[in-house]
Amino acid sequence: MLLLATPIAAQDTGGCSQRFLEGLGWRFAATDAAAIEIKPGTPCDRAGLAEAKAAGDLVVRIPEHLGAESRARLSNFLLHHPATKCAYGFALGTATRRAVDRLVGNPGYRFSAVQMGWIGFGPTGSARDGWKPIALFGRGYQPRGANSIAIEAFYSGQVRSECGVGRQIAQYATQAELYGRKAFDSEFDAEEIVIGTFNRLHTTRSILLGSSAGRFTHDGRAVAAAQAGRQAFMGLPGFIYALDRTKLDDLSNQAENFVVYDVGAEAAAALRHRGGFEYYNERNRAIWSMARTLRGSKSHRYFERLLLERDASLRADLSAGDRATMDRLDAELADPFYQEFEIYVHKQGVKPVGSHVARLLDRNPRTPYRIELASHNLNTTLYERYIEHRVRNCTYGGLKVAAGSDH
Image (cartoon, rainbow, N blue to C red; front, side, top):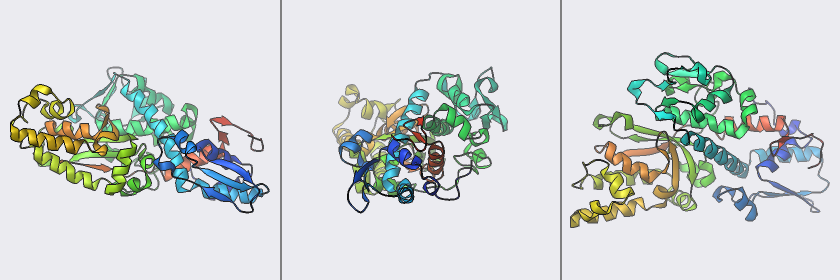
């Protein structure tokens, strides 16, 4: 699928671009004024589209007699407006949560350590689940038929993988939920939906990392996303990884690949104030340093029980000095970022970042961890493809409408 070489709205004098924008949340109001007035507001800071509308965001006032060509130019401008990317974030977040909820809800989708093979489809093999191998040792697969059937295997089948493939499936499934089953099958070639090792994906047409990925956003420390606001994080891929791989006790937890599930208002405000992830990576190291001084830290699931479950017996057994350290750890993890920045990691489900920080203190206590966003194309190539699809099909609210009809 190639992007249109000329601006979409320039070819669209029938209002399909405007219908798409309305579907995202923009409201177009006729006015007797002589000039167009765009009032984008701050939709990226809202919890959802309803809140954005209630706040008066995403409003355009258009002179009643504005011509078709001028409307087309306006639509093309709005398609690439930062506020439209935020409105797209509402749709992307909803699609991400639908996809993740189905993945989490499938008890048959299990975790496997790397040494057991990258992806496993059970005794019936990959064909029954809609996939065909493209690499040895379970390191690469693509759909053998309909893309949606292949995704359904992870929603309801018996499958296993490590968390990197879990992230890939969540990303593909998000696109499936965003487009709908039929359009996901028709708009993407099977060769573009590839799962396996990340190195394998680079040599394919994968829309995530292969030749169909197009332009990437590189915002590893989340500086740009934090400045934009909470909706700019929806569905973004990332990873939490060990700083010192020579000091790993549990190789299966050397890293956690994730997609962002949701971000609370206070977490978003904290990230904007701190300028992204780097402040919190410094706090991760400080938390790790403090945790290493606790005398009971070598017992099973110690930090999960102490810091997450707040086990009363463990807390009662602390010395005065350790209790002071625990209070400092509690204070660190009470930060809104640790409490309200929710991510999906296979097979951990959906949890705030603070839960992962505490869990990894148990799994690999000899090394601190960092959190970063992965390079992605959600707001570049995949966004452009989504626009092209919606405008080409002149869809509004999920329905196909005649280009000259009223709405």
